[in-house]
Length: 136
Image (cartoon, rainbow, N blue to C red; front, side, top):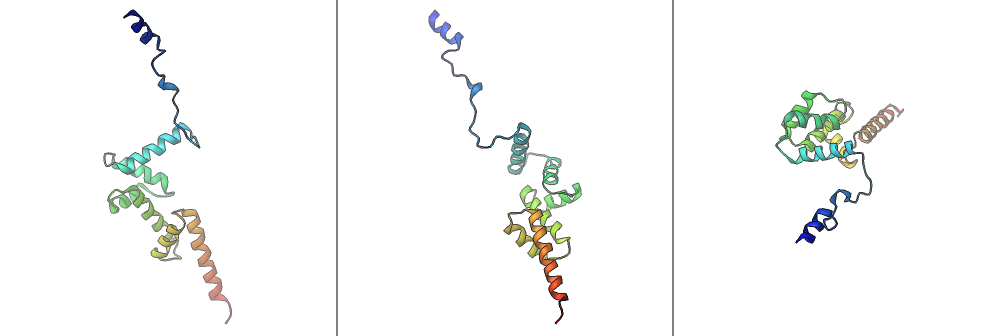
């Protein structure tokens, strides 16, 4: 009986969990990991506050106000990914050189990369303008 207590107390038979590391091909700094997990939890849960959800959307779409985030979220039934996509379409459309449907199509094609999509839309508009100005 004494020997079994002694072996448990020594910790030799108890696995040491603090050294366990999950395999990651590309480790990230802890702050980035926490942010990614927080965004994932917010995306999949309705228990987070509107303010938290607005902050996530505002972090993912440049130059957007809290009011615009609120409007986008309420329009999309508080679905963060849909709100982000809605705002990107609206931002691209506000450039005034393409229809909403064209903006959405370009964004979908480019995996919702706003910078690339805006470049494509503006290049198309420039080419169309040059083509229309060429002599008959």
